[in-house]
Each structure stands twice: as C-alpha cells, then as structure tokens.
Length: 130
Image (tube, rainbow, N blue to C red):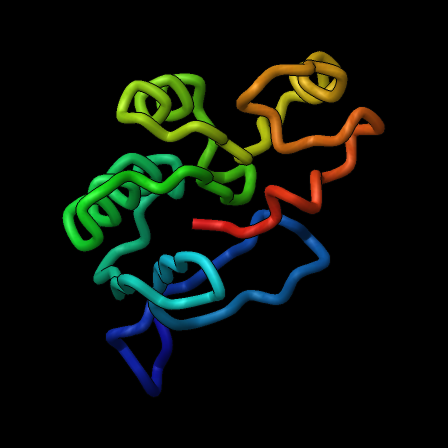
C-alpha cells in the first residue's frame, strides 16, 4: 500500500530485476486493427488465467461472435482455458504455455489451429489479435 495513495496495490511482476510498482491492474481487450473493445480496472488483482474465458465471452456479447483468433501472454494459459475457448468456437489460440516441454511439443505441431510457421515463428497471416 502506498502512503500517499492508500487505494493502490503493490504490483510485483515476479522477477527480482523488476521494480515494485503501485497501482491497479487494468485489462484491455483489442480486436482487429488495435480497436479497443473493452477495458476493466480491477479493485483487487485477479489471476490472469481467470480472465481469458470471460474476455472471450465479453467479446461475444459485444460483437455478436467469438473471435477467430485469441492471443495473450503465458499468464493467461491453462489447458482448461484453451479447451473452453476452442469449444466456444475460437479457431486459433495463441496463448503460450509456461512449461518448456509444452513449447517444444507445440513448436512443430502442424494443424489448422496453429499460428506458427514451420520454423516455429508466428505466422504473419495470423498476426492480428483479438
């Protein structure tokens, strides 16, 4: 808690080299062409992995359909999240797992839902994030 702004929270990034920050967590959702479709300021910091499915549900509520592609950082990953949003109709999921063995297994996976080229780099044709 900040002495000057008692409503703020301590935000640690989990890395020793990163400084401690004070503030509130803000989630920003974008669609194609970096159009912001939704944002939320959280009173208390939730787990990122708890936010992915509700984000897809909010996209569907606002735009009338699920996004074709969902991209997020590794904090949002869980196998349950991936399976849930695929069941909702998301065709491509670009949310990396934090597990190193999962990355090597996925790197060369060649399926319709993959957003990676054969060399493991992001496919430029699938670069827009929802």
